Image (cartoon, rainbow over all chains, first blue to last red; front, side, top):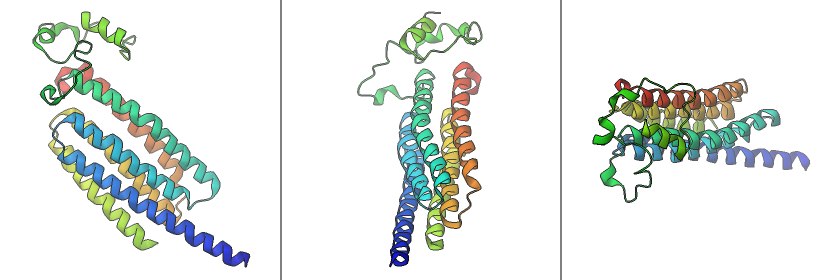
Length: 153
Length: 88
């Protein structure tokens, strides 16, 4: 009886794992499709950071159901790590995209960064000499104050 | 279970081809950075399939390294092209 229950549990785990793996792969494909089809860098960032992350999280969960507990813990740790790092990387890449003019500002409904971060406007183009000078190790413009300082230079 | 593996790996391979097209087309360095990051993520997903189906538990530390590598690589490259205008 217990053997039978264990066998049934095994089947349930395998089925759940298979469903999770296939769904994860599907979401990865959708994310890649979005990355290929979307018109500008900011919307491509949406596809890569949302659909792709969901896909890899589902895949990690599906793998974690099939391995011994220590490995499953490590896989869940990787999933947690993805949840922490993907928003950070997305924010940094999005900020760089905005600063370097990769965002088409005519498509934006609301532009809260307009006065804070420097997109390539004539005013910014008039000060070409600030790229190499003074941007050293202390340059961590993660907040509005730092960026304001840097824009003034 | 191996049919599941074939299906999942086929989906992931199709995704990798689409990402490679974006990687070649660009047009900006940022798009290529995003594409490389997604490619590393696809590798993680593919390794997950291998771990689940064929029980390659030796791949698990590789996953940790890949996750770290994709994050640090994308961040570093993005910061670099923010600093240097000729790389955009």
